[in-house]
Length: 416
Image 1 (cartoon, rainbow, N blue to C red):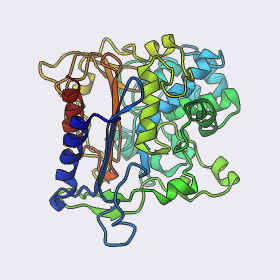
Image 2: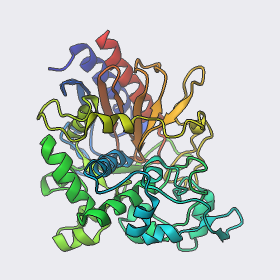
Image 3: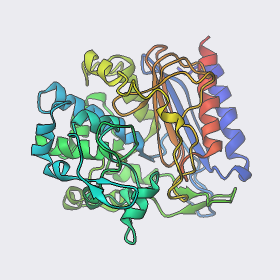
């Protein structure tokens, strides 16, 4: 049973944005759950698209399916940590990584002048999962973007070739930079187990949690509920419908096609937010689903995921990220501004706000995002997790981010 106070506040807040055509936000879905997996608030607002077609005008509902982009990363990380629990992978064994992925032993580091040099340190699975391996993203790193041209890199093409071609942009272990590390972690898992990443996720995460609508290859039923993708062009307030950013897995119909397409641990999944948050609910409960009773991770494994991997970089997210590809991301001067600038942390695949936040979230809350402006958080201290989902480019849309903050705050306020 939802919390009526939270439900009404969230619905009113979302409607205020989706009903105002000047925002360019067609529709939004927000869901928050407690430690029992019960919905505190679950609201859909607006419609699937801004266009005039019949499909565009369909209302956004709690059954709407979104490409969740980098919200996939925690799923791939859970998969890798399950393999660690089983002894099939090890977090700090570089030799194991190189045996499975000899490409990572040979990969070089891109310099500012466009030349490549040998790396000085080894790459481990822990580094891949914590974005300290030295890899970057072409849409956040101008040096990497320029190196790939005139052909260019596109990690949203569902092709392993772009991942295999990318050099490092930093020396391994020297700094934090957001990039393709978790795509590589997924490759490590596949080669260690002989199981494709999505198949592993379905068998070992989704089936135990009884979730049928979180998948790298949307089912026919999921495709019917797909939200439209939108673009806000630089300098414009309005948005328009665009071709889907990540369409190859949607088009794939045969098993052969699905095997050929890259199973991207970094950005490959589609989901209904109401189901995705049940994965977060299991993390709230130390790896055990409050609804099915399935233990997908041990408590000590979840604790390890929440450990700050970069204690020497307490201001890592205040450096800012440039908009190397302005159609894909806005510049981000700071990832999660907090009053007083408390130390920041990074766990295995997510940012950690180490001090309590203005919305009401507790200490050491995990959160992350997807490039089409989706955001999740998981607050183990206060027992609350949630997600806001949209499908609009570029990343860092102030209207969506504003709703994330407002709706999250409404949830915590209702619990007081």
